[in-house]
Length: 493
Image 1 (cartoon, one colour):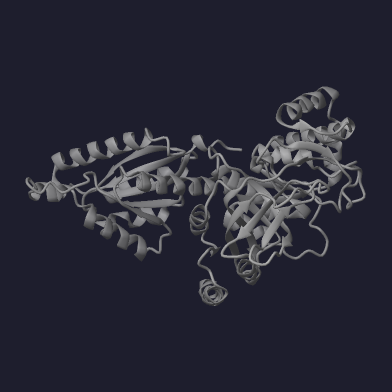
Image 2 (image 1 turned 30 degrees about the horizontal axis):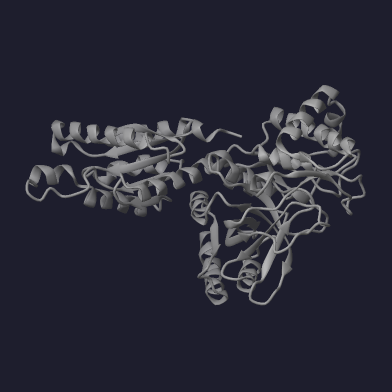
């Protein structure tokens, strides 16, 4: 997975020559100081690079072109310290293909009431300079994030940092390769989708490899490689079984998978229990450990979930809580305390575990293969989100659901899977009706680390539909939103 610290954001400040060289020198000095102070703040996951003071059409166009072609640049942040006539920005902003953040701030916090004069007024013009700049972006229909406030305030800085994570998700998305071992689970609708449109829209290259090619990789794994992987497992997890051969086979599969994915430049992959020819087990522990390293995964051929998981893991780097593939499995419908039990057959990432995961070997009951080794654990309690991506034929829709994860109400000693319980917002009945109305899949990405705002920003950067189910959502309000969205996206075709 690409390291989030390898990305940077260009801070471009606008002005004009009307105010004279002394004013421009002050503007540049202030902008450099802001860049340095922001970079010293550990809240930011990436560095901010001063992209320059721009005062002419050519300067604006050149810096936007340079940003487009710099692979380390994940986005551009603009600010109008003084008044920057925005016709000079038309060409540059029209060419810009990186995420774009418009800051509305000013260098000084307070007005110096006793000494303020016209020189001060001419120099500190963000209050109307940013409005001129904002009009031009609106006139161009340019997707952008607008954040207003004082640049030294922690709350404003946190909003910038959150936006950075979304922009990194865009950069990762645009070069993502997904390997599919076998096809989708037969007769399942929601895991299908237009791979050509996904590559055009998101940058995802999604292709299929025969399981036989993976089996060849598995058979080539050496005893030395298996031993190294076993040492890794014993250092990270509690071995709670004496069926060591089953664990060794997962080590063998993981080594083969990691080799294949790394050599091919893949960030995500899928498999399906309906296509395991030549394999002794379905990848369980192997997939769980790979997810913990940042690889995306989708069960039953679900390439959209696999891609989304990798992107969200890239966005969440450096945040403590985890991100995982997930499935709504079954309900506890105790009146007034309705909950969901989320799990999967095997493939839940240990990054969400409340305690040290345990390696077990138990029969799967599906797929007709040997009992696979897997990690068993309970998820942590705390606020989280569920995220899914569906293909509606004429567009992609992202659905985000706010939830409150909780400890399981009682032990489940006979359920050999990783699991987490949660209360959907605003409640299970309303939340489930809204999710189903929106077309939400049974697969999702579960995250404690990210919020709906991270995903909203990402969806807006990608220009796709976004639905947020939260504590204030009602079935009727969502129905109206879906009707309105249908008209809007139809007009965009």
